[in-house]
Image (cartoon, rainbow, N blue to C red; front, top):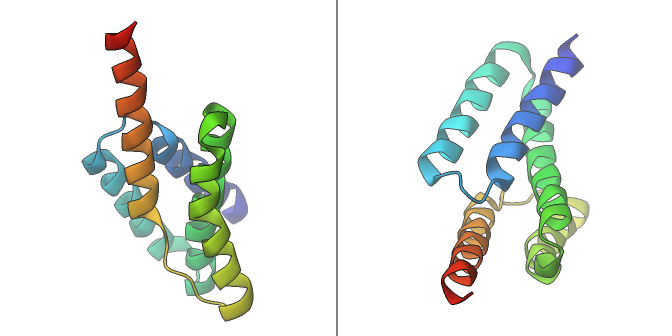
Length: 115
């Protein structure tokens, strides 16, 4: 049961974070609600695992939705995974993900004005 809840939290957050139309406040609110829910049901290690999985799933989802941004996504996820693997420590790249989704949003909307 607990793993189902954790999976749902990861899914919910990754959908919000990969939505290029989500505003920063919505993304932060989502992370805060996930954090609050995790405090009630998860151990500190499980909390970390959920946050790491949110980053992975968000990047995976962005790659599927916007394949032309694969290089930019790799620039976020590869150093993150490298630090996790070799240092067992990594800074969660939510700021970079937000900047990328904003860039995608702007490019998508600018294409509409050019066409």
